[in-house]
Image (cartoon, rainbow, N blue to C red; front, side, top):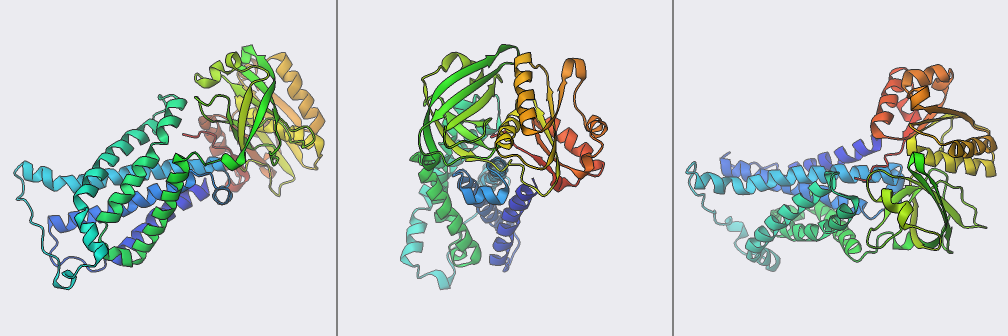
Length: 446
C-alpha cells in the first residue's frame, strides 16, 4: 500500500511542479479569464498525465509489478489514477464551459480572443496546423470526456457485471486516443518546449502504445498457455469448486501465492483466480478453487466439464511469502485460503525451516474439505487453526494475539475480504506489529 500512495502522489505532485515551473510568469492582470485559462491548462496536464500512467499499468508489465509489489497493487494504483483523471477532467470540463454558461446567464460579457503576441505572429508549420485543428479537438475532446466518464463509472460501480465491465473498459483506450489528440492540439504551444511538455509527451507516447496493445488484444498474449480441464470437484455446502487443469507446454512456472487470469469462455473473458497448487514441470498441472460470489463464478460448476479447453495467463502477484522472518502467521478468510494451499503444497515438495501458523476463518467447512486442508498442513509442517464462524466465532486481532503469543515476532500474510483484513491489520499494528510485516493481497481488480 505504501508504494501505491508514494507513486500516486509522486505523479500528481511531480506534474504539478513541472506545470508550475512552466508558468512562473503570471498574467499582468489577474482576471477571471486569465485564472480560468491557467486552471484549464493545469487540469488538462494532470488529467492526461494520470490517464496515461493508468494506461501503462493496464499492460500488466512485469517491471511495474516488481516496483509496486504485485499486479494487485498495480491495479489498485490504476484504479486511483483513473479516479484522479476523472476528477481533474471534470474540473477541466467545468473550466472550459464555465465562461459560456456565465455569458448565457448574463453574468459576464463574452470574452474576446486576444491576438497573438508580436513575437508569435510568425507561426511555424506545426503551430499553424495545431491552431487550425482547435475546433475539431475541442469537439472530439468533449465527447471523449463524456464517454470516459461513463466508462470509468461502469468500472467503479460494482453493480455492473464483471463481463460488462471488462467489455466496456477496453473502450477507454479509444476515448484515451481521442483525448491525446485533444491534449496535443490544445496544450499551450510554448509548454511543449518546457520539461512539463516533454514529460507529458513521453507519458502520452507510452499511453498511446498501451492503448494500441489493448485494442489489438496483445496484452498478456505472451504469458498465455492453453490447457484442458482434467477434473472438477464441488463442495456444495460451501459453494466452492476445484478445477484441475492440464497445461500445454509453455508455462514458466509459479510460486505458491501467485494468481493467473483464466479464460473458460471467450465470450466471458479473463477472470483472475489464485493458483491453489504447487508447480511441477514434470506434470504441468494446475488447480484453481472458485467460490460462487453471485456472478460468473456461480455458474462455472454447471458450465465447465472435463475435456473443456481453457487459457491461462500469468503468473502474476508478489504474495509469495518472501521475507526475513523465521516465524510467519498465515490467515485465510473464506476463499482467501487458496494461496496458502498452494504454498503448503510447495512447502511439502521443498521443506523449509520457518515456523508457520495458518488460521483459516470460514463460515462453512465441509468435512471433506477440512480433511484435505489438514493433510496439506501436515505434509508442509504447518500448524493449522480452523475457525468455523458458527461454533467457533470469527477471528479478530484480539483473538489472534491470544491464540499466538509470539505473533509480534512474526510476519503476517493475510488473504480475505477487504474489511476483514483491514480490521485485523489495524488491531495488530496498533498493538506493535510493524506495518512492513503485514502483507495482504488486494485481489479486488475493480
